[in-house]
Image (cartoon, rainbow, N blue to C red; front, side, top):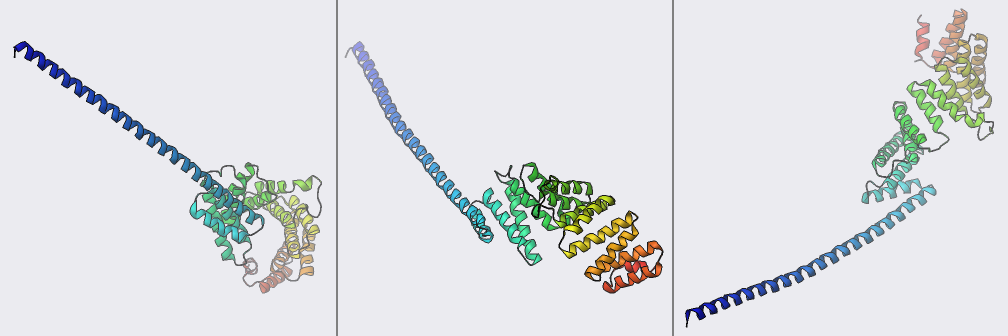
Length: 338
């Protein structure tokens, strides 16, 4: 075969091979493209299906939560606090940080606590209330919840004087969030007195008396005798005896509880003594003894009054009466040892 024909044949053969390979590559690319397109469609479909399933599950869970919350609210409105307490715990096992069952469990714990006869049982429920409501404060949705802070403040108040500052903190936060409850000023007044801040105590108590000062007083809206007595005690601590006397007189005139009246008259006697009205103080002390029998505190104060007058014999006789009623009365022991 001539050389040029052989060369031409070789070139054509190589060209055909190249064209075949290129065609194969194009076919394979087209085939892969189709495969990728199908795969992508499948992935998109799966993703959409997953989103739809997730959305459906979210709707179902939201509805379940709403129904569960509604059940708790119904039980609460029916006053079934133990059932609220138990049911909220079941919901928290599924959603430990759900603010609604956390709050409801805390509220129920407080209601159960104040109904206890045994003080240890009461404190156990109060501790549970505080723990649960503190968790609720950390949960989403608690920022503007004044009711939560109100109950938490009352729970700390129930823990005793050592927790007065915490009671003040949460009660003031509740008020700052515009949560209204009639007893907030009274709780604040007592809590401030427990911390020794008698000026703020009187201010809080005065706020509790505002409706009465507006002239709306009746049997239901009149201030309680306990409130009047508490205000008087704060004034006594500030040595403002004239103001204390006014509230004590009002307490004596309005109260129907002898123990409260006796406490008010005893404090009134001390106020009058500090104001220089010794005869008036004596009338209050003797009035308590005439109406309610023997009381160690009254005999001690009578002894102090007679000692102020210089009647030492009568004073010591009263202190001995106080010791007979209360052998551990340290102040009477100290006076008789002088």
